[in-house]
Length: 186
Image 1 (cartoon, rainbow, N blue to C red):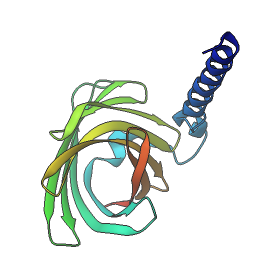
Image 2: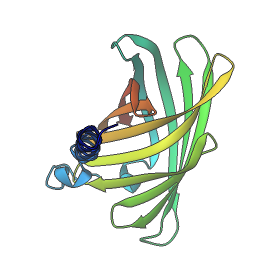
Image 3: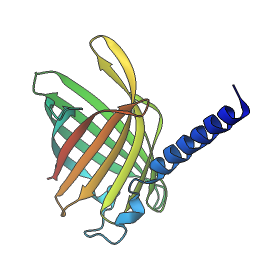
Image 4: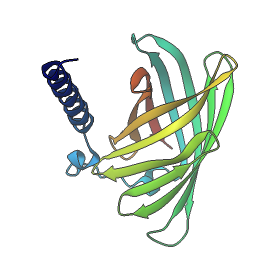
């Protein structure tokens, strides 16, 4: 490879790296919603019983699964260091059932860390204004195999009872599909 070819290749590689790094920063952040109302307090909304209705769509937008969720939620602990338990019971349109129990810990103003049995490591969350962003890796069973997929989960409080949720599921940075949910607090 000639010196000139090496320089062109290096410049192209540097430009590609810069483009990818800027693209990673281009998405919305929780702070973008800081002035939005009504103001979300995760501890208040996810306290008591919450029903959810959702769909999973593949990359093409086709609905692959419909489901409902019954959530029983509670919080305990001293102010500023509360721990929440979100017990989720899923019922899918094909009759299958699943359960996930989240443990959320408030780690600071608007920040949370979450764990669940099928989550790899910790989920990191941040609330601001009417929005909550939750990022995590989930062990997802599909046809007898288990895959680790990433979720970029956004929730938006609409009023005291309704919150909308949109989560993008990806693997190796490739978008696999989306989960769309409507939460309704009883």
